[in-house]
Length: 403
Ligand SMILES: *Cc1c(COP(=O)(O)O)cnc(C)c1O
Figure (cartoon, rainbow, N blue to C red):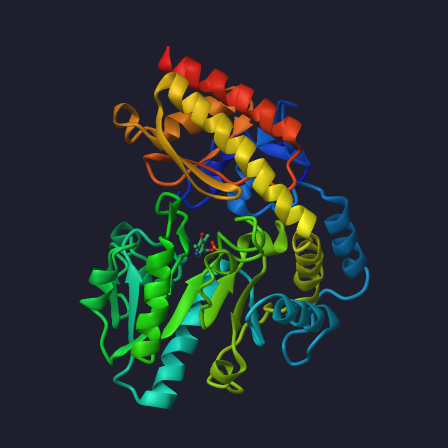
């Protein structure tokens, strides 16, 4: 019964219609290549939305997963476990953090981050200090709290009443933050590079300014590094590239390389505000997830891997710029490392999805970030020959679109 063939048409019969998946159904991946049900092969520049940081079926990750799978899958947080302790220690060694909370997704890591920011302010300054400043076009997840902090009204529409105490400023506009900040502000929440909002890098001066404002107003600076973290920018975390240290950082996506896991990183002093019983998760810190994430972090944090991200970034960016010029489709290619966005020229505004679909027709998977940006977030170890092949295929797709 459960072995009967399935196809894309079944999606519309058995799934809630909140997604609009493409027509192909991938069944296997290896490195940066993916094959669908019909054996058609694709070069993957999407990386499962910046998740499969070491490509598909990476032998080290398969090894870490299967080894842990034969030992112990789950305990709950009534007990701690070795993989979680090791991973937390590693994250503390490699970052500003002194304390870690594990979750299962980016949204949950942010939920923990926002709750901690509120709780910390409540404990130290009283209940009036509860306001969160975040940014228009930002994205922080799909729970009701995280969509409300996120700066895209279409994601809260119809789900009201939304949680209160949240105001939105303009990204890269320090004056708009100054106009909103007060002693009531408990936190500023920001993606160092806005991902879903169109691969928009934060200006270094802007992020430094947020740090200074937080210090001035006793507010916590929260970096959402769910998309920018784990080597994506050529640095383990983007805050290290900017030289601006947050008080709380959320990480997920690439952290598990495809296994669901998220984490919130913070300092020892702030962490005390999440005392026993204040927050929790059944699966968070699950041994399977942590064993896989450990392998991801151990691999990605190696200097030669991070250096490789910058080399690959140059190659991919150059190739995209060349295509952009030749066909007059991109006005710029922005982002950092292997999180790049080709910004469509006015003539192509609103048509990003057409590029995604044309790419699939030619055997290359790309992403979009809103209607105007082609987003690339491939494996951090994608072979350079796969980058070249992907660019060849993408150019073919673009040339057909432009024909
Ligand atoms: C993807 C993303 C999230 C949400 O992560 P989920 O794992 O889907 O809950 C939050 N913040 C940013 C910046 C993201 O890119």
